[in-house]
Image (cartoon, rainbow, N blue to C red):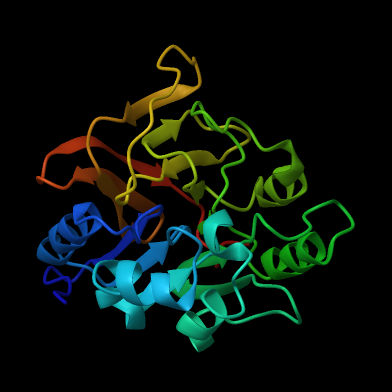
Length: 260
């Protein structure tokens, strides 16, 4: 595994890899060559997220970054989470009670791993935990990640059931990263949050509604991953295809947590 050599902290995000083909292997090799400090895995190990699927499909590709990965569960591994997700990740995916969601800090940024397959209603344990967690970080330098996107121009569409989580992130976070739709999307900010969809980690790609006015950028032609370079007061992002081409890049400013 290659680590970042520039002194910057490079966090990569991708989901919907862990496939039997070599598409995810090649993309993971690209990420290693670019330099990586952490990986946010946005869920889905195919076909059913069993221990066998993790060993045969995930481990040879994204599994090379296991010790620096922060995961969130996808729908394909949720039913077999006890034998697959839980055993494979262990302490890499800490729990809150029975809930499979958690947070951590990195280089002045706060990261929140949410779970789109557990209750997320306004009175749910997950929503209450998120409100408590974010209360400790009065700025907006928070990045949340979850498998199903709150908003998407892809075939799965929007997820209104995640609104209680999204509304709690509003005013506290600048980005929500998701997979589920097998393409790359960057949507225009909504209530201060930029929704990224990065379900382009190796599974067969799917198209989207390119005429959706919410889309700021998209790529459904090649597999790729999203690189985040953490700075104080901003995060720089770029979408990198397996072959190395960059098809989207920019920067999101934030208010540091120390600001009061």
